[in-house]
Length: 226
Image (tube, rainbow, N blue to C red; front, side):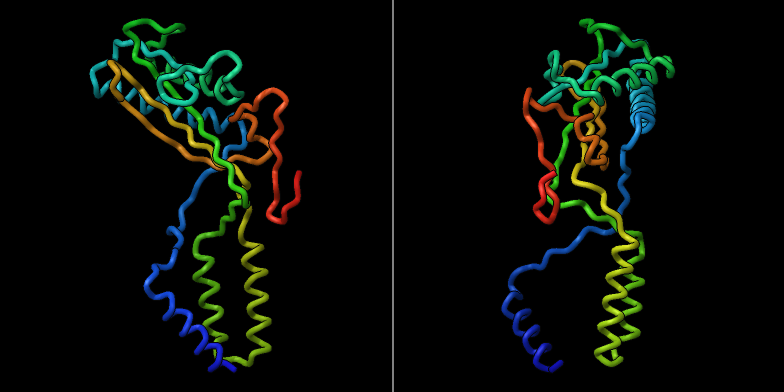
């Protein structure tokens, strides 16, 4: 029985040897935004980077103007285009910039350095699944120990491993956001940073507007519509 399975797998691998197999990225961590406080943490970090860049560029006396952009870095959001995050993040970023002593204009002036930020919402059809670091190593070790045990015990061990994997992992949800902030002067980037976060499914509307009357359906991995 095992010989037949081994032969079938070997033939399959030989037939596909000319095509590289896909592989996952090494484990990394990505934070999830779940509260306005997290927006403030990002605003503080971005304001600190902007302040440092102004010092390095010898622009400490120049004023900056903060605005949300929609579509691209050069197009300010029109009335009704901004989101809850757009408005909240602008207020928090201005507060943090003023706290760092950065001259910040309340309206755009010709000599101002523009601080633009934009948000891109990414929807994944299937839920994003994360797991704890080292989990696969633990599972591989457990399976290798049981490699030469009877088939019935191997089946039980495999089921236990799957249960352990499900318990140790977590669902990150369907949505991610990319938040990019740029500092532009004389049509050139003086500074730019991009941050990626998970967001909870019910909070996606904080970051993305929908057209009047439009609804967005969330589809589970089983095909159920919510």
